Image 1 (cartoon, rainbow, N blue to C red):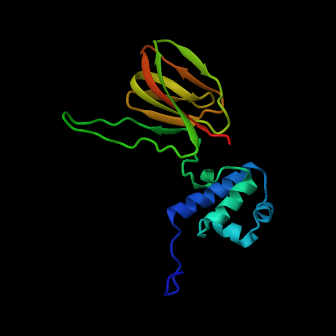
Image 2: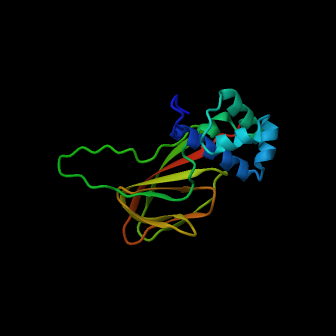
Image 3: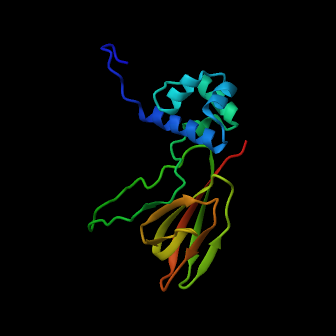
Length: 190
């Protein structure tokens, strides 16, 4: 609350941390009462944190991370959506310089950068990686269909696709070859 008694809007960081706490708790099938007990917090405090209305100390976040059995940095990560994220390529006028942030990859990951070159008419099945792995494809040239087996995307030069790499996925070219930069972000297991 502000000095005048008005409620301050939640910060984007508090909202992101709250979403991570809730997501990790739900992934483990843990009730909020169970997580609160394991972390030594009141249930109301945990509820406030998950709603993004808290201002937790590092000690509180550390207790939650220990109770969830994850690195503390996982609670601070904002990039949590493993669902396909397609960022279409953009055009530039002649002589124009373009600089675009395509994707921010959160900390706590091991990164591998690959170059994938596929001739026309090629099908390649992706082997699922470790749980929590996200693949990022940036099409340097050509066209391809890629992504989760159950919902691939059609990509062309300049497009970026991010998807959960821990599920079956595919890469397929049609009549045009493709040159793709692949960034694989896998959680660091401690």
